[in-house]
Image (cartoon, rainbow, N blue to C red; front, side, top):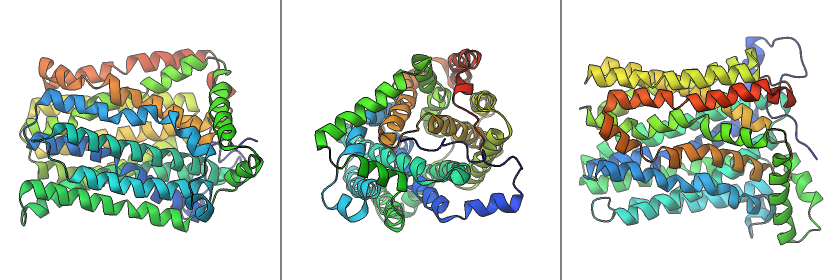
Length: 453
């Protein structure tokens, strides 16, 4: 049983749709569901990442220790290990009440809310180990939510809506991240007017936990994907352990039988590495050179959201206009070159216009790269029996750059200084571009079929 090509929504028509048709597809109920689920997926990532780093920096935690906190993102790297459970097992009550995908989604979101509330009760200055544990739990629940949302998105959208769904998902995901960075910082600042700083951070995280309910309401309003229901019917006579075994084995064996499989996996690991390497240190950098928390928050909240939306739809246009290989070249180059804007900002110093330009460039270019990369990952997943497992494997590998390869970024920044650090972050994109050239030469993208977004 195979799903439609997740990135070929326009394959059934040779005529270019009008702008009215393009706009109308974004208003389809299934696309709107995916949009709100994208927001729910993007929201918790920064709560165990960049926003937590601001909290730690203000609490006086050492810069090297802050850099090591990238390791709490380990669940995003290892989530493929429990993705077969999501594909194969039923959650008591939830699966019966809501279905295979929606049941897991509601269950994961409730656990995520509890983990964020637990993290809110910690103190970075007094107990960094407890902070690390809380952040690890948030990352684990967040990555579980991602497993389900990714499978739901790939399975629920018909070919004609995959393009709009992909662009909407990525844009909303980035907005969710912005809300949990700039939005959280604004909220903390507001609470500081009435409570001490430590309590202000706690209440800021409580508000973020409440926002997860947007995703829960969306899951309850959605309908179970037809492909998922058919896959469930096909395996209903199998035992739980058998289903888990088949989901895990099928996802891995099907992928590894493909031509150049190991090169593809290396490319998946490295494509977003340049973004992750610089991104983990962007917030500490902005604060370190003299900007205030609110300076950063105002620009990210305003211009950053606009740039993210524009970049998401620009990425969709690029992928629709060009082949997948060409689109990946464009996305890979622009997301790497955008890091030079921070090198320039480090030289210019505290200048709000320079910060605005740097943040705009970073959000716009990285959104382009992300949309195109999601299109590529979706094209690799074609079987609803193990969509969650296979997509989780690919996105977990993509998180290796953010989690492990970039964990020493803080020490490199201390050794080289900010201008050189961001210049080096451009150069780390070279290995992924070399792999892209190799895969293109070997006909990898033609084997995936035409991809039009």
